[in-house]
Length: 465
Image (cartoon, rainbow, N blue to C red):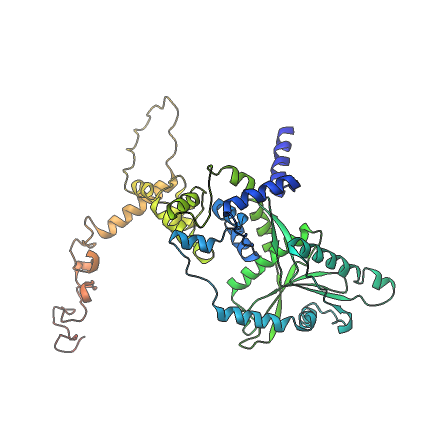
């Protein structure tokens, strides 16, 4: 029992992650800087990238490259497999313009939208504070955010204002900076806004440029925004601040540029992101497993750069194509290695121990073992049951063979149809453009009609029945 408890404590300590010492952090920063290449600044990891990383926690390649701050878009370009997605300059400009309008007057509009959903009384504009969070460097901005949050919660109704009989003041923190430890490495994040109400409650505000049409928005975009807010909620928890369980999602109303909002419950996303981030392998373990001399310097030759990238295990899935710059390179590598993950996570899970596409095809066309005679002795005990995946593949191959017949061009009734790719229709009759019809009927182009008569297509004669 004591060993079980000890293993559980070790597992929890690995999941939560103890804060590394100053010397360990400095050594890790130097190691990650060497992986980027000399003189290259780290690319900051935003909540969008962190959410995509949490959605695929088994991908050590993305975890290492994101922790090292490697520019994955430039890396994919150097590997000859650039990604073809992104946001246009028009969308960027429209998003910035909408955010500037929603946060004008020190965030007064954000407070009004929040009060409209929570039922609170909007504060006097004179009691609304918008502290200046500018500071030198990321550490300075994080400390300014920490101090502003503590001061805002003190000025709420649970602090000095209430003791003096005055209503608590509200605070709006625009573009604060928080920090979250991911896979053992600190990550700095910048929410759009944080509102601290008169009751010292903290609400995360996520401003997006996609519209809310007639009170509803695209579910996929709302889900992505909620997951990003969940990442900010975890970062605030790490700073000792507990945020509300709902995020205020601010979007354009219909087709205008006027802001509207909705409160979205993010408890499910908080639990999911927390669980996925705990599954990430620590950066120290990833760097220790690298071959000596590994570097992701973009000035390296393409073959050496590809070798460095391929030395880190990846967990490719078709969903990566929507959010990872290296998805096309990983897909090409997965196809070369006959990885069934190119068919989707569901197919890969169903195949079980069959780790390649070739192994799955061989299993589908393999012969089942002969039935054992009744009463046969098993000196070494009963044999292992057959793999369910192999049985399913054999059955699928058998059904396909029954449908196609002994030859690919033979129909169910044994007649060969001149259809495309050698496929035939029922009763082996031909259809339009070589495709097969039913009951011997054919399509246009002067082919045979239902009862052997000539049809009236573009090259035919009488009317077509």
